[in-house]
Image (cartoon, rainbow, N blue to C red):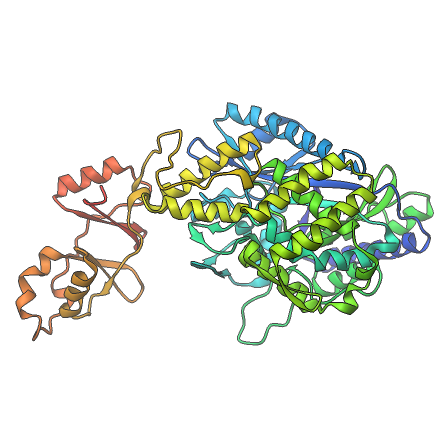
Length: 616
């Protein structure tokens, strides 16, 4: 969306004006393509780095605007979440040591951000989804207070006319109903751009689609969301659902999501991709437009196609077509949106080089990939990679092949050839592509995170384990050693700081609960079988209405054979409860004062955990 001041399209006049500007932009693009005005050389690369801001305990901290103001550098801009920022790197000509130069600029800019952030007791973390994010961080209160984010949120909500239903099933399962697009704020990526010769654009775009699965499989770095282990690259599932304008319905919904991989190979012209987007997706927002694009061309000016770019900014293809103007010349780019942030800068530049190398290393036999490969195989490969990372198997040229074999045997050699063809220094190519090779043979970021977290759970409850995981990830990032060289954390790993432990760190969330009308016999047996001494009682609305303790029922063990007594006759209804953010010392004090051994942890009337004296 850039830095435009945007407004929601509401009345007929505004909509008509916007559509007029949009159609003029398409007309201008077709004119520039037909008259050979699109820049063909030199070819450039570029990138956008999104990153998370965390406090001393590696929890998100919403001070992005203060830090941005203090940084005072046009390379930096906001994101939808007030705990995220973005860096727009300069374009570099694709030759020589351009990737090392990009890496150096990224380091300098991140160092600048770190210096400022330190004054705010804030650190910078690079990862696709921050493991320590919780539901409280995705409320509208944590949206960056800038007009365009509120406008987009209102427009998408108005289009849906219902809440967002998020359902992602991996090792664990996430099922969530949410009321804003703030779930988008969970995702941070390293978006990479490659300028493409206009005459070769459609072939290059189709090839970019075909290789998306294998490229993503070795870059996956986002296995966790709200403490759930989901996909190797959970961003793919989450982003698709978090800005979906389609409403759930009893009817078969054939409309395409605004976040999509696409449905078919491209066979027309570049502008046909834009035309397809405009045809499928109605404009949500508008801005002020000073000039008609066709009039600008007639006056010898190069238009920025602001209306088209604004619309394009609200259609989130994983491989997105971009039009831009640089040095007074129009150009076309493919933007890769599926690569996550992190685990290190070096890993990110390696990901970028691998993608660019395979794109420009395409052989003649791949020119017509749309004729030799079923599009649904390419699409299936992409989502398989998002789910399973390097464990994925791909449909490729009529065969089923592992990610490891496809990358090592075919795509890495292709990347070397492509980079050498473009004049990239051999030492630079070897430096970064060796990082990809090592990741294939050892582990990717998602696997390091999953293995480390599972080890930590042997000794720690989930919230503490996630903080320890994020803290250790941060320490390794600071050294910029590639993730393949990171040792998996063992169960005794700890942080360099004392976690300010709260109820949420030690409460039990794997709960058994009963209904107040359940028989006492059933409840006593559940308590015996599962070795629990406290049983929460909930009603039909899932509200906490009572608590049954072993002390309450142990005197009735002899009568359970003929017992018809139900839970409500024995449960306590005057409960002492606590919220998850309270300090542990406060929980101890409550238990001592009231001479109890159990505290239900609640959010409103809903039970979210149990804290017992054994936990303390």
